[in-house]
Length: 419
Image (cartoon, rainbow, N blue to C red; front, top):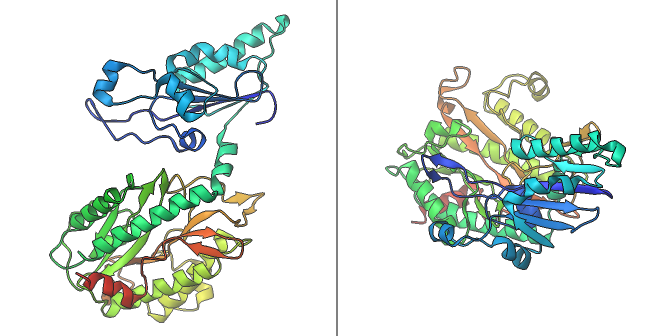
């Protein structure tokens, strides 16, 4: 932040679900990263100027409120349990804004989240400017704190990686239980239910995102979440599901043969995607880039599409003309951490940023042959396959956090048949 700076970071509020009910509370990722405070309507003030370094503004303890909604740390708990130098009731922050800005050259604040707080900050700065003849000097600049925070969050430390390993291990157990139900007659929501049950039973907060359980042609819908159709033997079911542990997400996809055996065209598409995923993992290393990971997957997928007769011509021409795009329309990787699509810039100084130890990302190529794709052999239509792992860059390569979930076809079949 530099000297003579103040940052105001807002936590999450309860989100209305309907009428007077709310969605389960989930703390803002930036606020959680800085404070570990997991209660709504809180704000943190960080200062490098005069005054306490770290102040929390929180909901005070109120016996009547706690009868309805449970324990609050309150002002005393914010200091005692969360390391704040000072704490105050949340309602006091607006009144404290003029004092917070006194002597601050830079104010770090995310505009647009709270119009009341935005107005108080701008109003206090304008008042200082009007009184400049009395020695009141307004802040020189307002800066979005995410410019610092998101770069910090991009590289994980050992504690963060341990939470992500736990999330991956729980996700592996959940996928195993779901794979055992990948048989004709079961519904997609039954597989989703056992995923959710295993996540919670093993201590995760729950799913890190809406689980995708797409049987048959539903696997060709990238973010399919209805999960209400019956599975049919001889088809595939794509499961994209991961859990959240201490705020950190796993994000893993496997594609299982319904009934226990990959058959004909489905096995051919599966092998093509697995081949591409292994090629992409092979170039995941420090100093490399996510573009290189993506390009490796695209090249191998394109070569395999040509070999299957779905594309014509040479791989170079198909890549240049992007004729593979109807069958592979998304990127191969995204950052992973406190958010499933985690924060951090993908480009630096106009070029793809080099990978560094501690960065975590996904590797998830796929092929999706739409059921109405008239340009492909009818045998392949309605087949969707994605294989996704979570990867952390190490000093000399990468660690696949989700390697315990099999992807070799024979091992996948064994999971489905292990009833």
